[in-house]
Length: 212
Image (tube, rainbow, N blue to C red; front, side, top):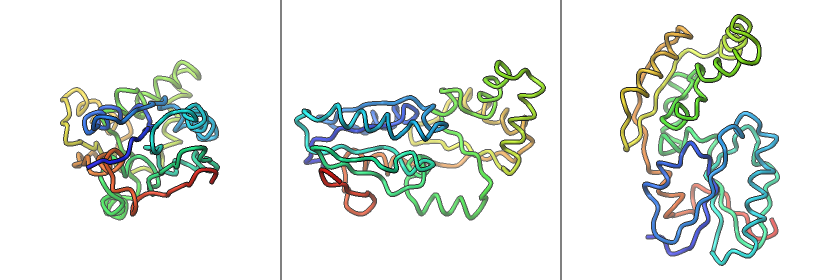
């Protein structure tokens, strides 16, 4: 059971999962998903929210971010300690543990993971392709997206304990057909999201003391 009052700074794609497991007393800030594609801007956006909380009367700040292409390197704790999950990126959070992530990584390293949140934010390959079409035109956009993802071999849809609609499944399958990749659905877990909200925070988190 949570005994500390936490401020959770998270990506918008995991809002549904985090809000589902939130206890009373937890505060949230959700940042736009596009920061994943511009990790050089991620640190500044997260640090800004940490700085804004300088006079907040809670106990700790917890990031729902992993290393995320080094997007959190240089984050500084101010008055409150900051806890950061010991994960490479958010897919580990959706799968529930580092062990589960490594199991999937060893089984199929060239995997492009999709979740309900990623699809709804239009950040699947087809969503990015649509964005590129407006920027480059269809022919060039198709070349760019295929070149970017040429080393992938599988599209994996991660279904959380909250379930998944058929619309999301079909969109994920369309991505696999578009890229001519293998398609699988794998079970996710809310286990890591519960840790972010309720703890324990000792084992699976980096702990920054105030000033570190």
